[in-house]
Length: 203
Image (cartoon, rainbow, N blue to C red; front, side, top):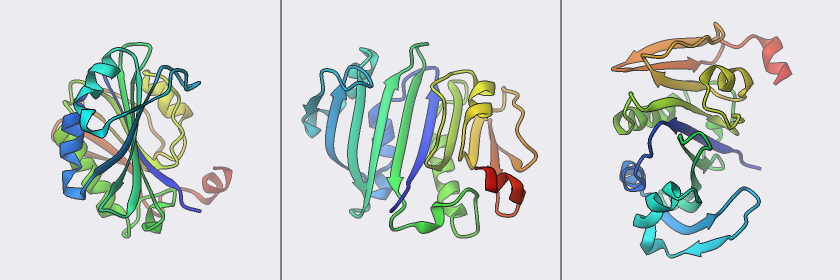
């Protein structure tokens, strides 16, 4: 059974869906279906015509949750979930199946998957305004609390192999994370061999 490899971004303002779609064009992102719901109980669930994707931003601004299913490179199942947090912050999660990319189904960054992490990081840095980024987490089967306070999110998250934040923010992460600076962003990564065995067994 394949896992979902995920990228979750929290920003102070909405990222236009057209910007997200264009950022994924190099990976032949195709929309298969769009659903709109009022809440996580799936009340008022409606299908939306794919040709009306330009209305997604307005729906999110009107506190709707948008669920998009699609494919990458014609073979990888993928999806996007976007909504406004109760605080007014914008949250978007992009995921794709690891069925054809088993190297991503692990709790660290390795020589086999680092290129994918770096490509995604490049897209995020080029797409998101660092002044508006609250945090970004990347990894397989992410668990991240529905919260905008980065210290609480980091403390209670699981399976995040890479964090991306603005360099204006200060955070505390375990020593297993390696810190890098990319322009106005700080990137923290867990690489193969940096996680003690006792921690791996607890996860």
